[in-house]
Each structure stands twice: as structure tokens, then as C-alpha cells.
Amino acid sequence: MIDALTVTVGVTALVLAAWCGFAAYRDEPTKDWHFIGMAVVSLLALVQLVVAVVQLAGGAKPDDGTAIFLAYLIGAAACVPAAGFLSLSERTRWGSVTVAAGGVVLAVLEVRLYDIWGGGHG
Amino acid sequence: MAEPATTTTKPAPAKGDRLSLGSGPGRLLVWLYGVFTVGAASRAAYQLIAQYDKAPLSYILSAVSAVVYAVILFSLVRGGEAARRVGLVCCCLELLGVLGVGTWTLLEPSAFPDATVWSGYGYGYLFIPVFLPVTGLLWLRRGRRAG
Image (tube, rainbow over all chains, first blue to last red):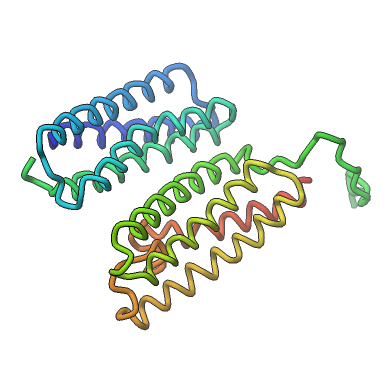
């Protein structure tokens, strides 16, 4: 897989986490701009899923197995939308904390994806 | 000396006004327990199906942890006094599990050719498996006072 894409998704996820963490610090719920940010990160994760599936279809083999790789890809794509959905019905600072945790989880998933792919040769 | 603001008798909660466990700080717990339910369940399912013979004990323990996480998640989402009690019991189980399995993996590594979710007190998961049940217990205890 393209390492640059993995890094981009991981970094934007951490930025989103910091941004929503700041909102929580200021005792604010997630607002429209936060949801736009979540959409951007989700879109990147989705692009990553598509790019990876194309590469798998082209015969690429992840080091730790295709099934695990796919499971993590799907988890990564679903991560931020799920956290955003939870924050929709929690209009307090705790909704922001949840999305911040979602960003951190996505960043961890990206690190794992990098390892599973076989770090480096991609 | 100020008088206590309310009397000690607790008003009966109105019907349909179920004690909420998944809002406020509980929302973060719903998210984390959701992540761990999905993570532990998919991991255990894959390992039990694809490589059961490699380390059956590890994979069965992972599956047990997945079930415990799922029950707590369900309790948090459902809310109410009964769910709160179920959640408390399962958080205790979770804490005992992570401490017990964590110690076991350190004392007898040979029994675990492959890691479980709770190996080494959950170091593979940033030690979140240790903090999660403690946070859960605190939150569910608080729920009683709030309700």
C-alpha cells in the first residue's frame, strides 16, 4: 500500500483528535466544522480502503495475511464515522471527547495497518 | 449549618425514564467498549477459525474477553438499574480477567504461544484493558447516586 496515504490518514486523524480534544477542553460539543473535519478524515480512510483493495486485486500480499489486513482497513474506514455518529446525539463536551478518542483509535489502526502490510516495501 | 437540600427518600423514577448509562461521560465508555468488543471479537473469531491449533488457550481467553466487553457495551447502551448491575458484575469480571490473565501470561509464558487481548495486562492495547474496567466501575457506581 502507499505509505504516504497511511501516514496522511494517521496524521489527519491525530489532528482531528487534537481539535476535538480542544473543543472538549473548552466545554463545547462537536459543531459543523468538526463534522466537516470528520468527513475529510473518513473520506481519506475510504480512499485508502479503495486503493488497498485495488492493490490486493492486483496480486499484492500483505505480510500478516489478507484477511487481517482487510479487517483493519474496514475498521479504519468505519472508525471516525462511528465516533461522529455517537457525538451527534451527545451534545456536550463528552461528544467531543468521544470523537477525539475516535481519532486516536484511527491513528493506532494506521500504525497496525503499516505493520500488517509489512512496513517499508509498499 | 446548612440544611441538606433534599430529603433522603428517593423519588421513584417515572415510568419510561430509565437510568441512562450511555450519555455524558458514559458516551466515551460506549465508544471504547464498542471498539474493544469489535476488536476482541473479530480477532478471536479469526484466530479460532484460522489458527486454532497454534494457541487454543490464548484464543479462547480472547473470545471470553470479547463476550465480557459485549455484555458491558449492551448494558451501557440499554441503561436502567438491572443493566447497571449486570454492567458492574461484568466490569469486576473484566478487571479480574485482565489482572488474572495478565499475571498468568507473565508467570507462565510457555502456556501462551500467542498473545491474548489481556496478555501482559493488555500492553498490546496501550494498557487500556486495565484502565477500562476501573473507569467503568467508577461510572456505574456513580450511576446509582445519580439515579
